Length: 247
Length: 306
Ligand code: SF4
Ligand code: SF4
Image (tube, rainbow over all chains, first blue to last red; front, side, top):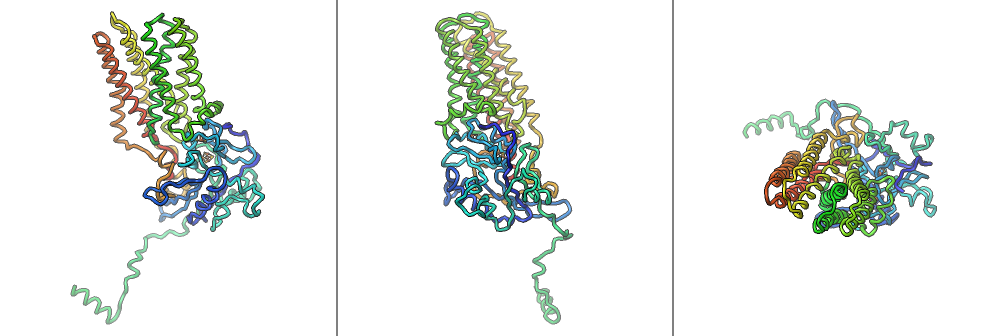
């Protein structure tokens, strides 16, 4: 059913800390590893060792440069996956009912056996969170590791999305963003968490925490190479200068 | 956006086919019996274009064998609505065409219903694109209006051509020809407005996409992947402004100016079917360029991340 639920009991999602993320791509790899063997079709790679490798990933890490007007630029690593939007445009455009948003926890999923691979949902998502698998020809997207978070066959500490469990920097948090008392909601309130592309009206559940601005501003960039130049003094200095003058 | 040939062909062919079907539907109101070859060919072409276009659109599906499922979500999805309307139009249109062609019953009621259904189907095609908020260029109410007007204009010249080819003309067909020229003019004038309205700065920027705009100017430093991916293949296509302008001009020349000149030639002169046949071809060529640009000029919001 591609009509969105009026409301969901919970709003499960991620909070991603752009201040802490070191851009190691561990979450990208652990996501691929878990999901290529988990829910639905595997995540194919094509021409993996050739000239034009391409593959399906549900989570990707971009790196941006932010240049304040009066300070040196800063680098921000930026992980991006499905934001499990409340007003998910990818769901309503789906002609087959393959895409849906669950009313119990708000997770947006694709019923792959019903997907015709028309690609319209990937067009509708402004964030680029959906990728069509080149081999299975069905739409793949982040499932919030729906096959981990409720899975009683794995140890309790593993019942979080694979990316959250893996992140060595602790930059990824998982929880119920519909519950104002949850840890993730408190984190968002404390740190001023924000939405991506609010102008698209998708009401994303996932939130991002801002990086700290650079502490001090350096007026002039220091020329590091000049510091490495040996500076001789005394007799050696005179000799150095004399030889220099000789050409 | 990547201009997929199957989809370009689909929208151009089924647009013209449904436009022609709509005209035949309205034709049942005004004209009585027509020569059998004219009826057979006209309905044949209308159905062939429509069905051919629809079939071609299934070529870009990953799983065409499940296409029937696309009929189920008409409550929320314009693609689903388009599928449902297309099937109903073809069924009602076939009954109408058969009754009129073989039993000489030109049912005005069925004709009007066929015409309305045809145009509603074309409208739904336009809405598939207009509903995509992530593509600024498409997300405007004028988008389905353009689709509708082009379908009407295309159907009109096709009708004019077939009419000339199958009936012995004794006097100039001023009325029909003027209506066709006006339809063409209106469609292309609206299209030019659509182009002008689309030339504005994007809604989503790297600043809004990352939420870091309050800190400064945002620029991509490293892509998330060194190779290509599905997203870049689908949305990474964007034609340069300079080329787009030239192609717009070519589209208008082929799609509007040439057909109108050819129709003017055809009105008094002999060989009218020849001129009108050329007008049909020119218009279709213009439409292919217009539809290619419709995709190639569109920027998707996700490109703010690349
Ligand atoms: S991020 Fe994209 S795929 Fe995920 S729910 Fe939102 S619109 Fe849909
Ligand atoms: S690609 Fe699959 S999930 Fe996406 S809109 Fe088409 S049928 Fe629905």
